[in-house]
Image 1 (cartoon, rainbow, N blue to C red):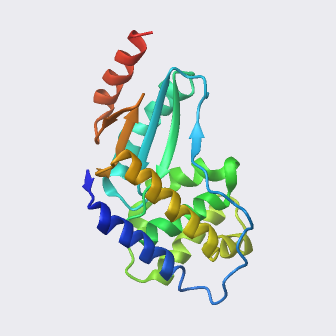
Image 2 (image 1 turned 30 degrees about the vertical axis):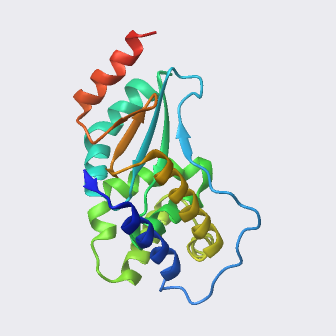
Length: 209
């Protein structure tokens, strides 16, 4: 688990917003009245609610995605047992930009891009050149069917980025998150875990029904 200092975390997120995307020269007009939301999977009526706090640049989050997320999705989310909510954490500007690209596709594409960001994390986030990272993210976006013009607008929408930071700060402080990934399962907090550990917790919750 990546440990966080809350004040430092918020300062980093604010700096990420201020920096925005160096590869693009013009700032797009902000979307009026757009309030960021959490993206979810599964039935809202599922008996188990999971909220995951994760960063797209967190290697522990990528490992969880590789080793556990697929089975969680197929065995619990798609079978109506779990309603899953993703809450993004912004360690750095790369993670913020990744979130902007994922969100650029809306409901239909968010989790597909989410999956690619984690499965290809080392490739797209490995460069020290921010402009190369932007191009890497746009390559993922193109693979998901996004147009360059749309991605440029999303990456340069400073108002949306600032709204994401504000929402992140509110949730982060309210839930007292200390590291990523962090899971809230029916309101109880858990740190990073294996699939076997997660399965045991979920099956115990189902047994209470």
